Amino acid sequence: MFTIIGGHAAFTQLVDVFYREVAADEYLIAMYPEGQELDGAKHRLQTFLEQYFGGPTTYSQERGHPRLRMRHNPYPVTPKAREHWLRHMRTALDSLELPPLHDTMVWDYFERAATAMVNRFDEPGETPRTSLGPLTPNS
Image 1 (tube, rainbow, N blue to C red):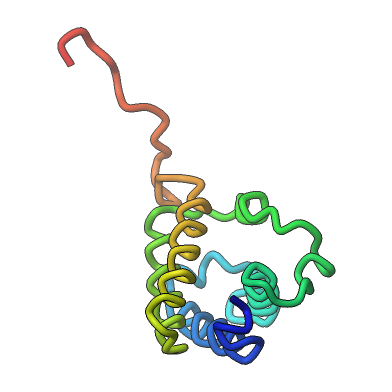
Image 2 (cartoon, rainbow, N blue to C red; image 1 turned 180 degrees about the vertical axis):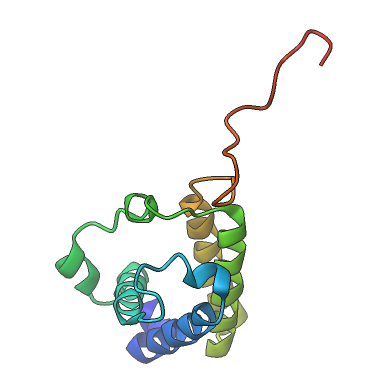
């Protein structure tokens, strides 16, 4: 897939467009410890995606096993964050103008991965939902 998608140049464009969108999104940018300095995040995402889609193994050489859930666990990835992330990734993917089959294959991965990263269902600052409420015989 790496070559079919367009190789390094396509992944550079994808990540550049994605992070341009993220930088303008107050909700998502607040999750990045680097703030507006996103070069490290861009490099990590690009090398991960290139490797995942069959390109160079730079990500694993630099960072070891991806362990995406573990690496994202410190950040409050809510369903709302997932939706923001996917919206920006959709914009980035559209910029590549891939044939429909290839677009669908890449998008399916992004949807699955974004869903897998959700690690909490309350928004930061809300009281965490720890139960469904009291259970009574008539409820």
